[in-house]
Image (cartoon, rainbow, N blue to C red; front, side, top):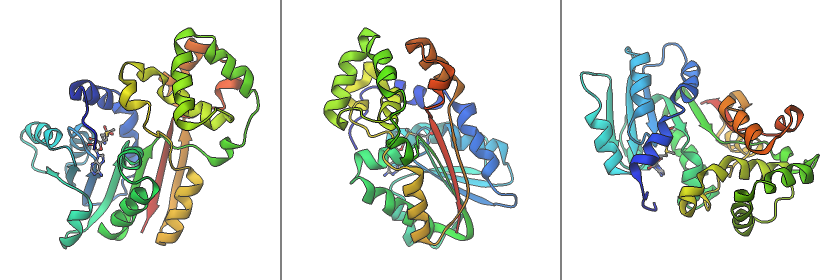
Length: 267
Ligand SMILES: C[S@@+](CC[C@H](N)C(=O)[O-])C[C@H]1O[C@@H](n2cnc3c(N)ncnc32)[C@H](O)[C@@H]1O
């Protein structure tokens, strides 16, 4: 994986929407005993969940060894959480199986820094394998619907509003160089999820934030024989306000855009 230029800033950005991210807690089924947090970074989410569910035990794994060391340093007195460096796949050789596997804001990175869709399919197959029977897979990430890819309603007007803000012009040009001309609401939505990271554009610009649609996740879960229990698409209020303030979008226009998807599937 590409080096993170400013790890401190990266970690702060990750943990900022903590309360938003912790909404995943309510999808942990009653009676679950063990949970694996894949791509846990500095352990912010894992530790918060471990505090919310003291009767459960949590393992966080990440490819970044520095992050794992930071996470270990934050465990304190807790007895129900541990952190390990490495790939999910490496754990399949162990007999240990989990009641819950969590992917929080990670699968788009698997896609961008791995081998695209095959890395996602492999990660979800590995998660399926490491879950016990009846286990629950929880994904939280930036996920859009494919049908938004076809929608063009008000597209030109909304694109003009974005371009009217001078500093967006160069970012949009570069975005279109990487991902192609914005010709749908889905593509504009993708741009809106990333223009605020202009100061780290070198890394963020190239990442595909929305590589797998809800419809595609459905297909993957079907192949894996998993049942989708819950699916939700929403917009973090902070982003809705930001898009409205930055570009003057009206409420009906804002309704076109989403920031967050949650998917819960059972083995
Ligand atoms: C955007 S952060 C998310 C951190 C945390 N889950 C959260 O939501 O705050 C993504 C993390 O995934 C890790 N990561 C990326 N690819 C990975 C892989 N193949 N296996 C394990 N971790 C990975 C990165 O090192 C990074 O710490």
